[in-house]
Length: 212
Length: 115
Image 1 (tube, each protein chain N blue to C red):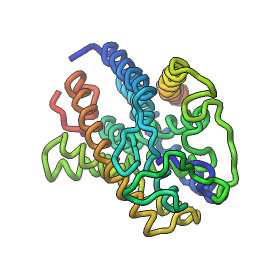
Image 2: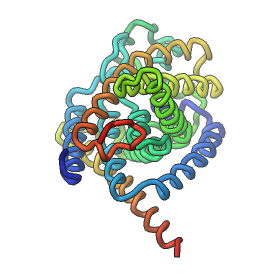
Image 3: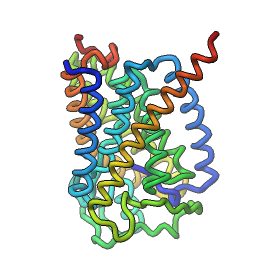
Image 4: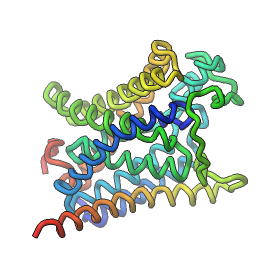
């Protein structure tokens, strides 16, 4: 769901950038206060993994493909939505500047959708579902699915405001495709969390609930 | 439990394998956003694939900013698959390094702030 420059007028892109910068500032403060030399490597390895997985488009039928976004994964693993904001912002900068994947003037909107909304929905979705299901992997999968679908719906609203998509057909189409892409998001998020939990459970945030 | 170094190296290797595999196996079908744009422009139906040549007509869209990335779509014109893999590897390491650099940079500034 990387929005290209052509999809949103520059002035609207500037507004999204301003909002994104507020969250980036908060996320930088989180890094300063919460990150330590034990956890920083996990943040960096997840950024590398998210970059690779975002390049891996998988067909989801109907002539459409999709890939992991990763906001939920990063937020759950590091125990904060701000982790997702930092990782997704930096990954989006590398993708946009070097590889033309996602625009420059619209990067603020992409950071809000995938980093901010993806991170918050992933983190709070996980903890809400954990209370209901008590299953780490079911909760991670459910939260990840929501953290793919809801940012896509947010993007369709932004693109309606931009005059690029009509509201209802845009939401139906974005919602349908990302409900399917969300299954990829759910599976990969659960598998990567399982991999980390089995190799270095101590490195996951305590809020994840893995016994160490 | 594996060592911390083992975890980092293992994670990077896994990312590199996934990235390299993406060069060969990633689907070329439009993503959810492009598919929606194609539907809006009458080039695709919701549940049917678009014509393989279909492209989003950006000229009719409201954004006027243009930027030419050095490696659009993770490739360069006439590049071999090997070059594409190298670009992917470069992107993966850059993502790793910017996060590490920013993290350690902020921690360093944070430390020098506090007497």
